[in-house]
Each structure stands twice: as C-alpha cells, then as structure tokens.
Image (cartoon, rainbow, N blue to C red; front, top):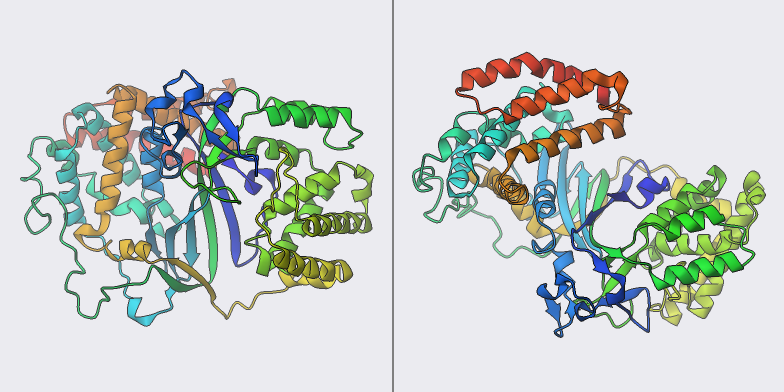
Length: 562
C-alpha cells in the first residue's frame, strides 16, 4: 500500500533528489484496539498487551510476558508476515546497475519505523581502498546454484513447472537494451539461468549432485570470490562515505492493522463537530472516522522502550485530509516543505515534514478557503504556520493532530531557540529564504551521503557464483512460502499473478480487463493463465506455445504502459 506524500500529492522533488516513496507493508495479524495501552508521557505511542484479548496474539513473541515484541514487525518476522516477507526480501536486495554513463546502486538503511532503500545514480566510493566493486554474471555458476537450491527445496513439481513457465515468459520479453529495465538488470542472469533445463531437471538430482565442488561447499554455500584478494580490507567501517549525482528512496514500513474504533478518533471527531472549525468538512471528518488505522514499530521520542513501543499510524486519515486540499493549499504546504528541506535543512532531521504538516493542519482549521486565492494570501497563511510553530517551540509543545500528545516532547530549550531564530529569519525574509531550496544546483559537484558498508560487501560478493546466489535463495524462499500459503495449489498462485497484472494495468493504463469493452485484455490474461498452468512435455512444446502469444502480450504491455 503506497502512502505518504506520493499518494497525498505533496512529495517535494528536486533535480538531485527524487524524494521518498512510502510503502506500508500490512500484516495479516489484526490488533484489537482494546489491547492498546497509551504511554502516559507520549500517548501517540502505545504498547500492545496481548493478555487483553482472547485471540491468538499470546502465541507471538512478547516482552515482560504480556507486551508484543516490536521485532515481529520491524524485522518482518515470518510469524506475522508469510508471503509478504519473501516478496520484501526479493525486492529490497542491494543491487548494482551499469549504464553507459553511470553506475547506479540500490542499498538499504534501517530507519526507525522500517527500512529505507536508497538508489544512487553516479555512485562513487569516496575512500579509494574500498572502491573495488564489480559485478559479473556467470550464467553457468548461477544455473548450478539454482539447481542446487531447488534440489534442497520443498517446492513441488507442479510449482516448479509454473516457475519455469514464468521464467520463459520473462526471458521472451527481455529488451535488447536492458539499461532501461531495472528488472532485467537485477534479475536478468537468474531469469536466463532458469529458462533452460535447470528447473525441470533439478528435482531428479540430489543437492550434492547438483552443485559441483568448485561451485559450492558441502553445505551448499559458495566460495567467496574475494577470499584472499590482495589489498582487500579485512576490517571495513560500519558506514562508508559515497559520492553521487542523484538519489531516490523507498521506505518500507511494516504495520499491523487495527480492529475497532480508536478512542482518540472519537475525541477528535467530537471536538471538531462541536467547534467552529472551518476545515476539514463534516464529510471529511466522517470519512476519516470510518477509515483504517495501523500500529507501527517505532521507539517513543521520550524514554524509548524499543522492544515494546509502537506508534499509531494515521496514514489513511492523512491521505483523506490531503485529498481535501485545494491546489493553493497544497502549494502553501509545498512551500513549507521547501523551507524545511532548504533554509532549515540543518534542523530537518529533528523538525521533520511531519511536524510541519501537523502545524499546517491546526492552522487550516481556522483559515478561510478564500484566503488562498491570491499569492499574498498564500504567503499570509505561510507566515501564520511559521508563527504557530514558533509558539509551539517556545512552549516546547506541538500537539499531534489526532491524539492529545506532544510531538516535540524530546526537544530541549537550546535547540528550540536555535530553530526559532531561523524561523524568525524566514518570517523577515520569506522570498530570500525560499530561494535556498529553489536555487540551481551545481551539477559539476558530487553530493555526499553515508551508507552501511555491509550493503557494499553484499554487492562485492555479487560476482561469479556467489553473484546471484542471494537472488536465487530469495526467489526459492518466496515460492516455498507461496506454495504453503496456497495449500500447494499452483493454480491459485497463477490466479494471483494474473489478478495482480490486471490491477496494475487498471492503475497504470486505466484499462479494466474485466469491463465489457476490453475483452481483448481478458483474453490475453486467460492465455497467460493457461500457459502458466500447462505442464509442457518438452522445451520445444513450451517454446512453440510461447512464440504464439508472447508477441501479443508484448504489444499489449507496450500499449498499456506507453
């Protein structure tokens, strides 16, 4: 589920920073609201008391014998994530992509509410002694590794057949220039390795037979191609500094859905309905009251208890509020974000865009919509929000919009005064301070960031046999979990694939494959479904059938996605 500024239409992008895309990864485990115990010091944070329900929550990992352990969420534990965990493992692997002019890398950072995957274009390692980075796809070695993993796995012959058919379709769709395809740059070697007799032969061999001594150890792990390399550092630092030209990010936030009505939402609704608030509308209030809410593993901002602290996620409510913004209100908020990322960048890790969004909500309650009609009116509201934030910093109390909780309870007096001083400069010179963010960047200069060295180590190990072993393992694990989740019924897996493809086509191209006027779309999906469910007698039969419909499928995709 995509949430945050991307869905709200308030994501701020520059020529050097695409910003973050936020993905909420929702568990199948539902948390009853009666199990939530608000922390008295910061009530927007809660503990989950599993003893307050008769559900199966008590079977999960706990702290102090009664509070749910946050590690279940934070680390995508398989007891609360099954198939989703495997999908996450596949799509968040560090990877390196080569193009004519650039080296692109994807690496992961751990953040408080989840995990952040950053993609850097024009990557360079600042420290020369750690600069060795090369990825070469050894198809022969990858094929042998895949055969070994399949021979060890519990995947049924029927599911192997579906896997083989999927790989065949993907390989048939391989573009001539894979530089434009993230999928094929990341998984291309594995796809190619899986399209020969690898999958169909693997189950007839033992794990030892399918993995030669020069490729794998007895336990099935590969020799490290860097072992003994002269000059390679043994004690690398935890974080390394890199240079880059451009970056973008994806935040993956695991969450439990809540069942029941949150008391704080009832209080929020009653407060607004009884007040003279101009915004939001009654319709919006009721829509928010009926929407879904989540808990997310995040340490409290005061006296954190990392193994027990969850925060309440109001993502749906925030998307509903953003949908109610006029274009002018949205512009005003984007100006606030540009100040936060520009002139106030020094404090941006502490006074975040969420703080500014909360302040903006509070000011909007008493601001007439017509105020935003003119540019001077937008700047007037901008000053109102800045003044409101100064008042909150002076009191060291910024109220959460939905809960009676202080969002800056962890700020000290000194830092509040420093931020106030900078905000007062903005109030005095709004245009000049806005220019800090909007001024042209010097593209001749590289930008600087720090990333976990362990991620670079993974990329270094993606050479030769060890290269795609991690990708292969993740794919095999994903299929095993899907097999378990479908009760060993491959047809359900195929149904899920075609249903997902239909949803993507509808979202991206506006084509409803099941509508009366789009019979051609449903026909293509049925052809795909039939192909994936077929257990072909020979590779020749498979290739013949594939050549029959693959060009139609490729043409359909080109029309659907431009």
